[in-house]
Image 1: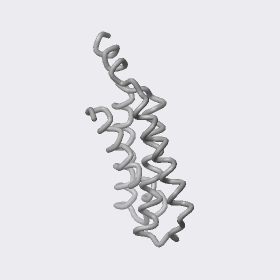
Image 2: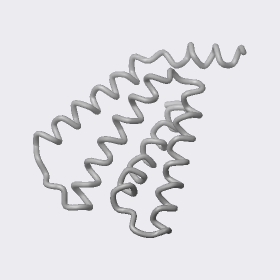
Image 3: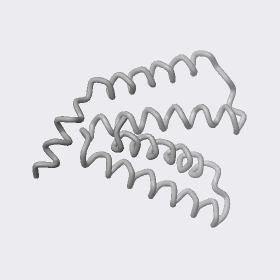
Length: 115
């Protein structure tokens, strides 16, 4: 996996924090942490989108962020565990992995290096 996909995964990781922060922030420090997570998340996604196909980057970003947020809500905030929800998240992740596997990012990176 190359550096650009690592940026997408970090962006999705921070997306989980800011989405949770939007729901659970209660004072200036927690709102500041949420704002920092938003900045890092979008910065990493934008940087990855400069070298990878933007549609695929966004789909992977949102899919991983959604899965991470659902798992965090179950693990840390008392959201009820439902098998149907887990199976649908796994289906979503399979689609995200499939998108990444069929994306020809080498061609896109070579085009960016030539310009």
